[in-house]
Image 1 (cartoon, rainbow, N blue to C red):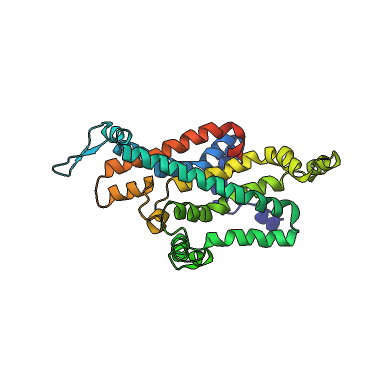
Image 2: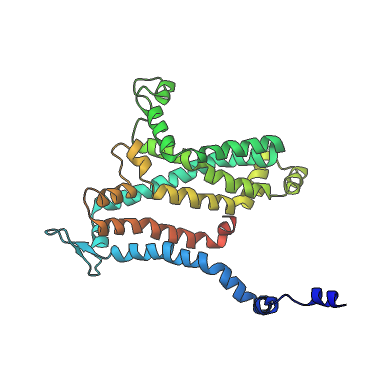
Length: 305
């Protein structure tokens, strides 16, 4: 009996150590909101400090100026940088050109991604579908600079693209067309994957019902498939539009004399050494994307991200 009682008796200090832990666990079990707060506190703190904090610093510094004589920062709030951006035609033109490039890239990617995603989701066998997904994701594993400089080689006079178009400088060369082409290539996977996910969730019974009612392929796609995947297309456009709007490396490599917002930001950080004006320029894509997200928030696109 004594041996049994010895085994049943808690080892010294176990009750004292386990008691508070068990009481804390029981209290946390009854208060789910405390568990959730503790779980999300670290990532939320990182989001507020690193992301929202950097945007706040960007906005604040855009209100500063640089003394043209001394080159020193003048930390007094003013809207002079924004007045210059909206008053000078060159900056307005660059902003409009940047938006136009982002829209063109988004449209091109959508036109290419729709048939590819439809084939992957509704036509290809599971094995072929898996290989196609791998093929689409593979370019994302390569370095951004490697892909951009590869396109620089292909687009050069005498390069593969120029040779396919007959040579003698018939290729696009370097400039706005090359910029749109390379950006469309770089961000295409970000358009294909959301559309593919949306088509994969689309019931085949809807298309079969359309066929039973006499609808042909084009009519089924325009009346059944396309309306159902509009949120997925918009979700993909959020990626392609935002990434194209703020890009500057591709423009530096294949853009020739083309200027976009990203180039102006880079120039004012480097040679011009005007950080407040660069910050003011950088806020333009931020405000444009905020407006775009607000405009599409009710379309269901944000649920597709």
